[in-house]
Amino acid sequence: MRKVRDYDAELKALNDKARALKAKKVEQLGQLVTVTGADTLDPDILAGALIAAVEAPDAEAREAWRAKGQAFFQQRRKKARA
Picture 1 (spheres, one colour):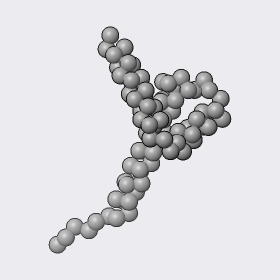
Picture 2 (cartoon, rainbow, N blue to C red):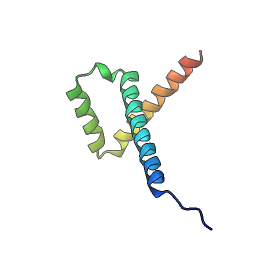
Picture 3 (cartoon, rainbow, N blue to C red):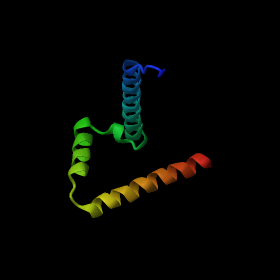
């Protein structure tokens, strides 16, 4: 005889996992703002800068931002090792 699956328990577990992942993402975004020093900016300025980055159609600008971000984190890793 087949074991009966508890779909309610499985659904609850998936919802709990999704909630935990969302909370982790929000926490990581907050840490990113703090680490980069953007927490010193006025929230309106930070929001405007993020919106401009999302709406930027220029792929070259996005790639330049990506390279600058990678360099920032590589520099932090080097400092952490030293």
